[in-house]
Image 1 (cartoon, rainbow, N blue to C red):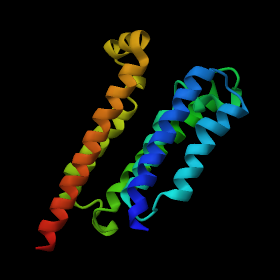
Image 2 (cartoon, helix red, strand yellow):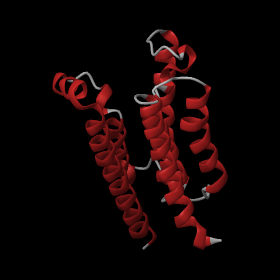
Image 3 (cartoon, helix red, strand yellow):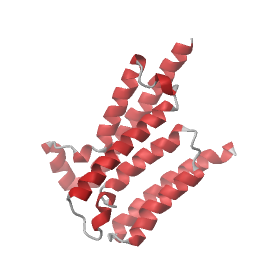
Image 4 (cartoon, one colour):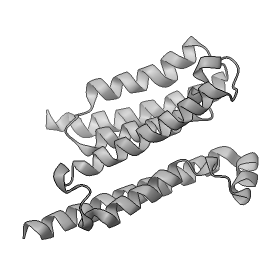
Length: 185
């Protein structure tokens, strides 16, 4: 069964990318977008990915981060086909952000004993996770330079910020694992 793990991971990533491309070109917010761009990749991940591995939680954190805004606009699901603000939008934004951070921390917890997760020696990995989290939502930061980039080339910025976020998250895992091995002696 271990031979299928890399294939299921790759399939989950490709399915998510295809579903985002579909949402971009379909450009309607209805039950078809809900099924293809949200339920299908999420159901596949839940059914096919091993829950005991960090990849499952990493996938869930970035899944939420990616479907939150364009091209899916899941943070406006209650007002589809309109993409709007309002209380429901802010509630979903906060909920999605907290879930992203929670899943990133759960992934880190797979590299260290849960009782050691918030110990002093895990300060650096947690700081790197905080940076990864901020990068995964960089387009939402109220920074003027980013806002002008977002208006001009949203998707390029989205790809770059998520790639940088994944690198910081992976580095946090590397440091956490290294510190855990040193602590075990």
